[in-house]
Image 1: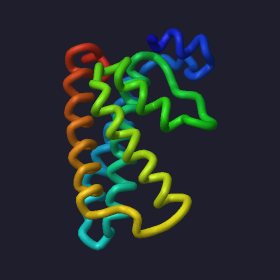
Image 2: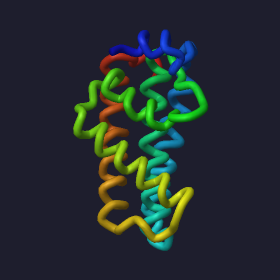
Image 3: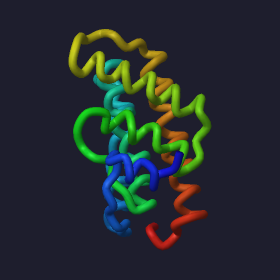
Length: 146
């Protein structure tokens, strides 16, 4: 499977990458990485904000490849899954991020207090790793977008 196949299946639309878009997405990720560490937030919000940072990083990688995940059902799922096709993230990291996506959905739409401090810390660590991996990938494969 490749991004071109996803495009053909209607999961992605073409969108030429721009330096401004990539910089904006990474700036959002950096903001959220910082804000997710605010002590008074509690684990639910810390996880949700760190998750958003990771999502912005994954979105930046798709954008750098000239695509945008189509809105609608499964947008976050497909954005996360794309990490294997864009930056070459391994299946276990993608699976962990998807598991934390599901936890984020639980606290966002169903109930509060469902996240432990350990899960919030795990999400922050994963988001930081993704931010660094996306930066390195962009520097190696799309330096003109930085």
